[in-house]
View 1 (cartoon, rainbow, N blue to C red):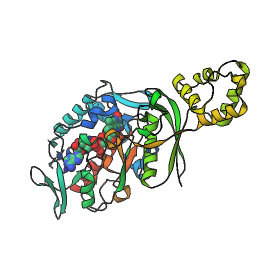
View 2 (tube, rainbow, N blue to C red):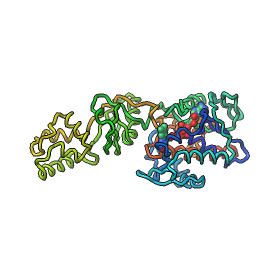
View 3 (tube, rainbow, N blue to C red):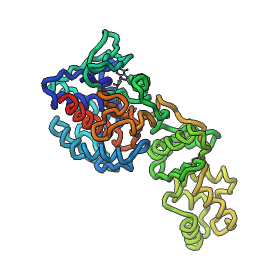
Length: 408
Ligand SMILES: Cc1cc2nc3c(=O)[nH]c(=O)nc-3n(C[C@H](O)[C@H](O)[C@H](O)COP(=O)(O)OP(=O)(O)OC[C@H]3O[C@@H](n4cnc5c(N)ncnc54)[C@H](O)[C@@H]3O)c2cc1C
């Protein structure tokens, strides 16, 4: 077996293929000189390996039924136990994110590389695969070091996110050449660039919000979490999660708007009732003072400036119209999205090889028998929180079992 790409998914598939097929040579070929660039940068250098609770609804893209099946075959409990046997204990943090106890991504990468070597995987670095051809006996891989023959191939080249790590989309071309189609890729988990000036003075401020993406002809998507204002626009977990919805709508030519509820959990009626209670209790409090209890002071100030509401006006003197205008604005503050920061800043790629071209039981290609696409190259993208690595571990494992069955 040859794995094309030795990132998270390729390493996982190689380790398990080598463990399951002791009589076979397992090669893991990677274009990068140093393996695991993404594992090392993940989670701010601490590697958010998985999440305490992973469900199919934590993913977007292709069929959730297929995602569910793959996750069920290698659930979080297996990931935790697997890393434990490699000497990497994990602990849970906010939002169920699981990190290594060492707080170092290097521990995760070293453990995987050690496991690969111990299982007998031949790791070949600096080896880009530029062609992949099906033959009667299997595959011929074109590499800078000459042709490589393999009975089965695990295609684990990732997508287009963070291209300097080695994911430049060659994998898509290899898959297309073997007959696969592609769900067109876009960046996902990526900061968004805003027009206008509103965001600029707020750079560095972060607070909890709800973000809603409304795309023409689709059900609105509302997500909650922390938003970070930046010099170019917005980032933070909720924006990263929402980004794929705006970008997919753009790709499909559907007009889309993005609004943010600056009072998360509130609806107009509840917010107005709370405002009226506050007005009755503290009629002389300024509007700015009242808002600063609900929002970071800089955001409150920027909102009032934008709406041309005098920040010093006492609550009791804010007319009904002004109150309603303010609350409506706070509950659906428009974010004038102009684009994203692109693949250089994206954590993953949405789109890829459609799941209906893959057998969900083994991840073997239905289009090209003997080929097993895994990880980010497939049309699956998870939300932030360890879900994308869990997809890499689960799909890598399932493909290894599929390879073992095919070589049996
Ligand atoms: C900054 C950042 C932070 C992230 N943090 C997290 C996190 O904390 N938790 C989480 O769950 N997810 C995180 N992710 C997402 C996660 O890293 C990916 O989902 C995961 O790495 C995908 O694994 P993969 O093996 O499919 O692809 P990749 O990790 O991209 O690996 C693909 C490998 O294939 C090689 N390759 C590509 N083309 C070829 C070719 N033609 N020939 C040979 N080799 C090739 C590349 O060099 C690379 O080593 C993060 C991503 C980024 C960019």
